[in-house]
Image (cartoon, rainbow, N blue to C red; front, side):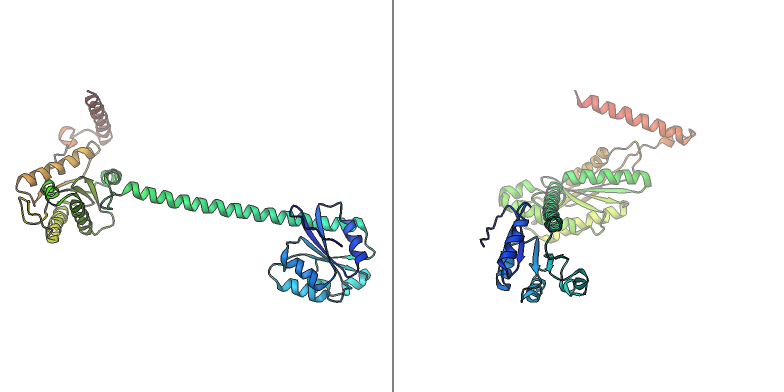
Length: 368
Protein backbone atom coordinates (compact mmCIF):
# COMPACT_ATOMS: atom_id res chain seq x y z
CA UNK A 1 0.00 0.00 0.00
CA UNK A 2 1.46 3.33 -1.11
CA UNK A 3 1.63 6.26 1.31
CA UNK A 4 1.76 9.72 -0.24
CA UNK A 5 2.63 12.60 2.10
CA UNK A 6 0.80 15.80 1.28
CA UNK A 7 2.04 18.90 3.10
CA UNK A 8 -1.25 20.67 2.45
CA UNK A 9 -3.36 18.18 4.40
CA UNK A 10 -3.53 16.98 7.99
CA UNK A 11 -1.97 13.56 8.58
CA UNK A 12 -3.67 10.62 10.30
CA UNK A 13 -1.75 7.43 11.05
CA UNK A 14 -3.55 4.05 10.82
CA UNK A 15 -1.67 1.15 12.42
CA UNK A 16 -2.80 -2.45 11.73
CA UNK A 17 -0.90 -5.58 10.75
CA UNK A 18 -3.61 -6.68 8.29
CA UNK A 19 -3.49 -4.97 4.84
CA UNK A 20 -7.23 -5.50 4.25
CA UNK A 21 -8.11 -3.62 7.43
CA UNK A 22 -5.80 -0.76 6.46
CA UNK A 23 -7.36 -0.56 3.01
CA UNK A 24 -10.89 -0.44 4.42
CA UNK A 25 -10.09 2.22 7.01
CA UNK A 26 -8.23 4.33 4.50
CA UNK A 27 -11.18 4.08 2.13
CA UNK A 28 -13.57 5.27 4.82
CA UNK A 29 -11.46 8.41 5.38
CA UNK A 30 -11.07 9.39 1.72
CA UNK A 31 -13.91 11.89 1.80
CA UNK A 32 -12.40 13.73 4.78
CA UNK A 33 -9.90 16.52 4.29
CA UNK A 34 -6.97 14.56 5.63
CA UNK A 35 -4.03 12.43 4.53
CA UNK A 36 -4.33 8.83 5.80
CA UNK A 37 -0.94 7.14 6.28
CA UNK A 38 -0.80 3.39 6.97
CA UNK A 39 1.73 1.35 8.96
CA UNK A 40 1.82 -2.42 9.52
CA UNK A 41 4.43 -2.67 12.29
CA UNK A 42 5.84 -0.98 15.33
CA UNK A 43 9.01 0.20 13.55
CA UNK A 44 7.14 1.53 10.54
CA UNK A 45 4.65 3.41 12.73
CA UNK A 46 7.33 4.95 14.93
CA UNK A 47 9.38 5.95 11.89
CA UNK A 48 6.42 7.86 10.46
CA UNK A 49 5.76 9.49 13.82
CA UNK A 50 9.37 10.65 14.13
CA UNK A 51 9.40 12.27 10.70
CA UNK A 52 5.92 13.79 10.40
CA UNK A 53 3.22 15.59 12.36
CA UNK A 54 -0.03 13.72 12.96
CA UNK A 55 -3.40 14.87 14.24
CA UNK A 56 -4.51 11.38 15.26
CA UNK A 57 -3.42 7.73 15.46
CA UNK A 58 -5.89 4.88 14.81
CA UNK A 59 -4.34 1.86 16.50
CA UNK A 60 -5.60 -1.73 16.35
CA UNK A 61 -5.34 -3.37 19.75
CA UNK A 62 -4.71 -6.84 18.31
CA UNK A 63 -1.31 -6.14 16.77
CA UNK A 64 1.50 -7.76 18.82
CA UNK A 65 3.43 -4.55 19.60
CA UNK A 66 0.55 -2.25 20.52
CA UNK A 67 1.82 -1.57 24.07
CA UNK A 68 5.31 -0.72 22.82
CA UNK A 69 3.95 1.71 20.25
CA UNK A 70 1.92 3.55 22.89
CA UNK A 71 4.78 3.59 25.39
CA UNK A 72 7.23 4.94 22.80
CA UNK A 73 4.76 7.64 21.77
CA UNK A 74 4.14 8.78 25.32
CA UNK A 75 7.85 8.78 26.11
CA UNK A 76 8.70 11.07 23.18
CA UNK A 77 8.16 14.83 23.51
CA UNK A 78 7.25 15.09 19.83
CA UNK A 79 4.49 12.47 19.98
CA UNK A 80 3.36 12.44 23.62
CA UNK A 81 0.29 14.61 22.97
CA UNK A 82 -0.96 12.93 19.79
CA UNK A 83 -4.42 11.46 20.53
CA UNK A 84 -4.89 7.69 20.03
CA UNK A 85 -8.14 5.94 19.14
CA UNK A 86 -7.99 2.19 19.77
CA UNK A 87 -9.77 -0.11 17.36
CA UNK A 88 -10.89 -3.25 19.17
CA UNK A 89 -12.96 -6.35 18.57
CA UNK A 90 -13.98 -6.48 22.24
CA UNK A 91 -17.48 -5.66 23.39
CA UNK A 92 -18.22 -2.42 25.19
CA UNK A 93 -18.13 -4.14 28.58
CA UNK A 94 -14.79 -5.76 27.72
CA UNK A 95 -13.44 -2.39 26.52
CA UNK A 96 -14.07 -0.63 29.78
CA UNK A 97 -12.21 -3.42 31.55
CA UNK A 98 -9.34 -3.03 29.13
CA UNK A 99 -6.33 -0.90 30.01
CA UNK A 100 -6.62 1.25 26.88
CA UNK A 101 -7.42 4.46 28.74
CA UNK A 102 -4.66 3.79 31.24
CA UNK A 103 -1.96 3.70 28.57
CA UNK A 104 -3.14 6.84 26.82
CA UNK A 105 -6.11 6.19 24.55
CA UNK A 106 -8.61 9.05 24.21
CA UNK A 107 -11.38 7.06 22.52
CA UNK A 108 -12.22 3.65 20.99
CA UNK A 109 -13.95 2.12 17.98
CA UNK A 110 -15.55 -1.31 18.03
CA UNK A 111 -15.31 -3.74 15.15
CA UNK A 112 -16.96 -4.05 12.76
CA UNK A 113 -16.30 -0.38 12.03
CA UNK A 114 -19.30 1.82 11.36
CA UNK A 115 -18.11 4.37 8.73
CA UNK A 116 -20.38 7.12 10.04
CA UNK A 117 -19.06 6.74 13.60
CA UNK A 118 -15.47 6.54 12.37
CA UNK A 119 -15.74 9.67 10.26
CA UNK A 120 -17.59 11.53 13.02
CA UNK A 121 -14.90 10.82 15.61
CA UNK A 122 -12.03 11.51 13.23
CA UNK A 123 -13.62 14.79 12.20
CA UNK A 124 -13.65 15.92 15.84
CA UNK A 125 -9.91 15.38 16.18
CA UNK A 126 -9.22 17.03 12.84
CA UNK A 127 -11.06 20.12 14.08
CA UNK A 128 -9.16 20.05 17.36
CA UNK A 129 -5.88 19.79 15.47
CA UNK A 130 -6.77 22.75 13.25
CA UNK A 131 -7.72 24.81 16.29
CA UNK A 132 -4.48 23.85 18.00
CA UNK A 133 -2.47 24.88 14.93
CA UNK A 134 -4.40 28.13 14.65
CA UNK A 135 -3.82 28.85 18.33
CA UNK A 136 -0.11 28.19 17.91
CA UNK A 137 0.04 30.56 14.93
CA UNK A 138 -1.78 33.22 16.93
CA UNK A 139 0.57 32.72 19.88
CA UNK A 140 3.58 33.08 17.59
CA UNK A 141 2.05 36.17 16.01
CA UNK A 142 1.32 37.64 19.44
CA UNK A 143 4.84 36.86 20.61
CA UNK A 144 6.20 38.49 17.46
CA UNK A 145 4.08 41.60 18.06
CA UNK A 146 5.16 41.76 21.71
CA UNK A 147 8.79 41.51 20.64
CA UNK A 148 8.23 44.25 18.08
CA UNK A 149 6.65 46.47 20.73
CA UNK A 150 9.52 45.80 23.14
CA UNK A 151 12.05 46.63 20.42
CA UNK A 152 10.08 49.76 19.52
CA UNK A 153 9.95 50.76 23.17
CA UNK A 154 13.69 50.25 23.47
CA UNK A 155 14.28 52.36 20.37
CA UNK A 156 11.95 55.07 21.66
CA UNK A 157 13.71 55.08 25.02
CA UNK A 158 17.04 55.37 23.22
CA UNK A 159 15.77 58.20 21.02
CA UNK A 160 14.27 59.95 24.02
CA UNK A 161 17.55 59.58 25.86
CA UNK A 162 19.44 60.98 22.88
CA UNK A 163 17.04 63.91 22.55
CA UNK A 164 17.34 64.77 26.24
CA UNK A 165 21.15 64.58 26.51
CA UNK A 166 23.89 66.73 25.09
CA UNK A 167 25.61 64.86 22.30
CA UNK A 168 29.14 65.81 23.36
CA UNK A 169 29.17 65.82 27.14
CA UNK A 170 26.41 63.27 27.81
CA UNK A 171 24.74 65.46 30.42
CA UNK A 172 21.21 66.92 30.04
CA UNK A 173 20.83 69.46 27.26
CA UNK A 174 19.08 72.82 27.20
CA UNK A 175 15.77 71.29 26.10
CA UNK A 176 15.79 69.04 29.16
CA UNK A 177 16.69 71.95 31.39
CA UNK A 178 13.81 74.06 30.02
CA UNK A 179 11.35 71.26 30.80
CA UNK A 180 12.90 70.70 34.24
CA UNK A 181 12.81 74.34 35.31
CA UNK A 182 9.23 74.76 34.10
CA UNK A 183 8.07 71.92 36.34
CA UNK A 184 10.07 73.09 39.35
CA UNK A 185 9.03 76.69 38.80
CA UNK A 186 5.37 75.71 39.18
CA UNK A 187 6.19 73.65 42.27
CA UNK A 188 8.07 76.56 43.81
CA UNK A 189 5.13 78.90 43.20
CA UNK A 190 2.68 76.43 44.72
CA UNK A 191 4.84 75.57 47.73
CA UNK A 192 6.48 79.02 48.07
CA UNK A 193 9.94 77.48 48.36
CA UNK A 194 13.20 79.03 47.12
CA UNK A 195 14.55 78.07 43.71
CA UNK A 196 18.18 78.64 42.78
CA UNK A 197 19.89 78.71 39.40
CA UNK A 198 23.63 78.80 38.71
CA UNK A 199 25.09 79.78 35.35
CA UNK A 200 28.72 78.85 34.69
CA UNK A 201 31.00 79.77 31.82
CA UNK A 202 34.51 78.53 31.06
CA UNK A 203 36.91 81.46 31.22
CA UNK A 204 38.70 82.39 27.98
CA UNK A 205 37.49 79.22 26.27
CA UNK A 206 37.91 80.69 22.77
CA UNK A 207 41.58 81.19 23.50
CA UNK A 208 41.74 77.58 24.74
CA UNK A 209 40.24 76.31 21.49
CA UNK A 210 42.50 78.51 19.36
CA UNK A 211 45.61 77.25 21.15
CA UNK A 212 44.85 73.55 21.75
CA UNK A 213 42.42 72.80 18.92
CA UNK A 214 38.76 71.89 18.91
CA UNK A 215 39.30 68.22 19.75
CA UNK A 216 41.06 69.08 22.98
CA UNK A 217 38.46 71.78 23.49
CA UNK A 218 35.79 69.10 23.33
CA UNK A 219 37.70 67.04 25.92
CA UNK A 220 37.82 70.11 28.14
CA UNK A 221 34.03 70.54 27.88
CA UNK A 222 33.50 66.88 28.75
CA UNK A 223 35.73 67.06 31.84
CA UNK A 224 34.11 70.28 33.01
CA UNK A 225 30.62 68.83 32.52
CA UNK A 226 31.40 65.69 34.51
CA UNK A 227 33.00 67.70 37.31
CA UNK A 228 30.02 70.05 37.58
CA UNK A 229 27.64 67.11 37.76
CA UNK A 230 29.75 65.58 40.54
CA UNK A 231 29.20 68.70 42.63
CA UNK A 232 25.47 68.15 43.06
CA UNK A 233 24.40 65.45 45.47
CA UNK A 234 20.62 65.61 45.57
CA UNK A 235 18.57 63.64 43.02
CA UNK A 236 16.28 66.65 42.40
CA UNK A 237 19.16 68.92 41.32
CA UNK A 238 20.14 69.20 37.66
CA UNK A 239 23.21 70.32 35.73
CA UNK A 240 22.84 70.85 31.97
CA UNK A 241 24.86 72.18 29.08
CA UNK A 242 23.24 75.46 28.18
CA UNK A 243 25.19 76.18 25.00
CA UNK A 244 28.80 76.40 23.84
CA UNK A 245 30.98 76.61 26.93
CA UNK A 246 28.06 77.61 29.15
CA UNK A 247 26.51 75.33 31.78
CA UNK A 248 23.51 75.82 34.04
CA UNK A 249 22.35 74.20 37.27
CA UNK A 250 18.93 74.24 38.90
CA UNK A 251 18.63 73.64 42.64
CA UNK A 252 15.04 73.31 43.93
CA UNK A 253 14.34 74.20 47.58
CA UNK A 254 17.72 75.91 47.89
CA UNK A 255 18.30 79.32 49.50
CA UNK A 256 21.13 81.82 48.90
CA UNK A 257 23.54 80.18 51.32
CA UNK A 258 23.03 76.75 49.77
CA UNK A 259 23.31 78.03 46.21
CA UNK A 260 26.47 80.02 47.02
CA UNK A 261 28.03 76.96 48.62
CA UNK A 262 27.29 74.77 45.58
CA UNK A 263 28.57 77.42 43.18
CA UNK A 264 31.82 77.84 45.10
CA UNK A 265 32.23 74.05 45.22
CA UNK A 266 31.85 73.98 41.43
CA UNK A 267 34.45 76.73 40.98
CA UNK A 268 36.99 74.95 43.16
CA UNK A 269 36.26 71.59 41.52
CA UNK A 270 37.13 72.91 38.06
CA UNK A 271 40.22 74.64 39.42
CA UNK A 272 41.36 71.32 40.95
CA UNK A 273 41.20 69.63 37.55
CA UNK A 274 44.35 71.61 36.76
CA UNK A 275 43.80 71.47 33.00
CA UNK A 276 46.54 73.59 31.45
CA UNK A 277 45.42 76.84 29.82
CA UNK A 278 48.49 78.86 28.86
CA UNK A 279 46.48 81.58 27.14
CA UNK A 280 44.17 82.15 30.10
CA UNK A 281 44.13 85.70 31.44
CA UNK A 282 43.05 84.39 34.83
CA UNK A 283 45.26 81.45 35.78
CA UNK A 284 47.50 78.80 34.23
CA UNK A 285 44.66 76.31 34.25
CA UNK A 286 41.03 76.15 33.14
CA UNK A 287 38.66 78.09 35.40
CA UNK A 288 35.01 79.03 35.40
CA UNK A 289 32.96 82.05 36.38
CA UNK A 290 29.54 81.65 37.95
CA UNK A 291 26.40 83.72 38.39
CA UNK A 292 23.74 82.79 40.92
CA UNK A 293 20.08 83.76 41.20
CA UNK A 294 17.70 82.78 44.00
CA UNK A 295 14.00 83.45 44.14
CA UNK A 296 10.72 82.41 45.68
CA UNK A 297 8.74 82.86 42.47
CA UNK A 298 5.29 84.40 42.34
CA UNK A 299 2.55 84.05 39.74
CA UNK A 300 3.59 87.30 38.06
CA UNK A 301 7.30 86.34 37.78
CA UNK A 302 8.80 84.73 34.67
CA UNK A 303 11.42 82.04 34.19
CA UNK A 304 13.15 84.14 31.53
CA UNK A 305 13.64 87.04 33.94
CA UNK A 306 14.92 84.65 36.61
CA UNK A 307 17.56 83.15 34.31
CA UNK A 308 18.47 86.64 33.12
CA UNK A 309 19.36 87.58 36.70
CA UNK A 310 21.82 84.64 36.85
CA UNK A 311 23.16 85.59 33.43
CA UNK A 312 23.74 89.17 34.55
CA UNK A 313 25.43 87.90 37.70
CA UNK A 314 27.71 85.77 35.52
CA UNK A 315 28.61 88.86 33.50
CA UNK A 316 29.51 90.68 36.70
CA UNK A 317 31.70 87.76 37.83
CA UNK A 318 33.58 87.92 34.54
CA UNK A 319 33.85 91.69 34.70
CA UNK A 320 35.31 91.43 38.22
CA UNK A 321 38.19 89.26 37.00
CA UNK A 322 36.70 85.80 36.31
CA UNK A 323 37.12 82.59 38.34
CA UNK A 324 34.56 84.05 40.76
CA UNK A 325 31.03 83.49 42.03
CA UNK A 326 28.64 86.42 42.02
CA UNK A 327 25.16 86.44 43.58
CA UNK A 328 22.54 88.24 41.50
CA UNK A 329 19.91 90.54 42.90
CA UNK A 330 16.31 89.50 42.46
CA UNK A 331 13.89 92.41 42.20
CA UNK A 332 10.57 90.89 43.10
CA UNK A 333 7.23 92.54 42.62
CA UNK A 334 5.33 92.52 45.89
CA UNK A 335 1.57 92.96 45.48
CA UNK A 336 1.06 93.93 49.12
CA UNK A 337 2.95 97.18 48.49
CA UNK A 338 0.33 98.28 46.02
CA UNK A 339 -2.70 96.34 47.25
CA UNK A 340 -2.34 96.15 51.04
CA UNK A 341 -6.01 95.94 51.96
CA UNK A 342 -7.52 94.21 48.92
CA UNK A 343 -8.91 90.70 49.55
CA UNK A 344 -6.59 87.91 48.41
CA UNK A 345 -9.04 86.52 45.84
CA UNK A 346 -9.35 89.90 44.13
CA UNK A 347 -5.62 90.42 44.36
CA UNK A 348 -4.99 87.12 42.55
CA UNK A 349 -7.43 88.18 39.86
CA UNK A 350 -5.48 91.41 39.36
CA UNK A 351 -2.24 89.44 39.20
CA UNK A 352 -3.59 87.14 36.50
CA UNK A 353 -4.79 90.11 34.43
CA UNK A 354 -1.39 91.75 34.86
CA UNK A 355 0.38 88.58 33.65
CA UNK A 356 -1.96 88.31 30.67
CA UNK A 357 -1.35 91.90 29.62
CA UNK A 358 2.39 91.54 30.07
CA UNK A 359 2.46 88.44 27.86
CA UNK A 360 0.39 90.20 25.22
CA UNK A 361 2.86 93.09 25.26
CA UNK A 362 5.77 90.68 24.84
CA UNK A 363 4.05 89.03 21.88
CA UNK A 364 3.42 92.39 20.19
CA UNK A 365 6.99 93.53 20.73
CA UNK A 366 8.40 90.27 19.36
CA UNK A 367 6.45 90.78 16.12
CA UNK A 368 8.01 94.17 15.41
